[in-house]
Length: 249
Image 1 (cartoon, rainbow, N blue to C red):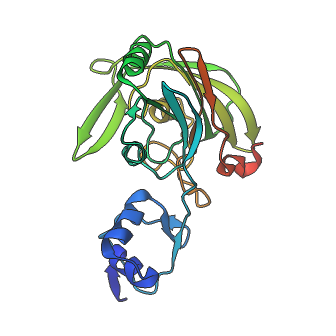
Image 2: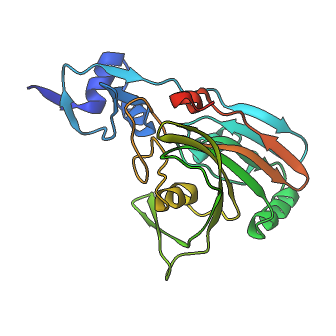
C-alpha cells in the first residue's frame, strides 16, 4: 500500500497549500471513511478520499457600548475569534469544538466589572450536551479538577487532593434509546469542566475523543454554550443542528 502524509495528500487533492491543509486537519474538520483525521503528519493511503466539514459563520448576537456577545461555531478556537475583533477584550473562552455564547468587553472599565463577576461565580452559564446513556435524574457534580498543560495542550482530571473546586449541575432534557440530551449549569469555569464531570459520572459527551464517546456520525464534541447572564445582560445561542441527532428533539 502506497502512503503519503495526510496533510500533503489533502493539499494535492484540494489544490491548496500544505499549511492550509495542515490547519484544516488541526481544526478537526477533515474525515476519511467517516473517521476524523487527527494527525496531519500521519501516513495515509494515497487512495483515500477526504470529506471536509464546512465551518458555520460566526454570528454577532448583541452589542452595545460595553459588551458584545457572539455565537461561536465549532472548529474555531477562542484565539481565532479574538483575532477577528482586535479592539475588544475577550471575557470567556470555549473549547475549539464547543459552540455558543462568547463574550467581549468593549472597554477596560466593563472588562474589570465582568472579571469580578466571573471570579465571584455570579455569572449564569448554561450549556447543552448530548451524552451516552439514559440520564433521568438531576445531578449535582462537586468534584475538584486539576489541569495540566503540556506543549500547548491541556488535560484535566478529577483530583481530590490537588484539584480546584468545580461544581456542575446536570438536568435531564430528552432520552432516546441509550442517548440523552442534558442541560448543564456550571458555578465555576475550570478547563474542560463539563467534559470531565460528565465522564466521571458515567455519561460521556458524544464526539469527545479525549474524555467522552466517539460516534461515526458525529464530527465534533456535542457541547454548546446556550445561555449566559452577566451584569443584567442575558444572551442565548440556538443549538446547532447536530444536536438533533439520534432523535433528541
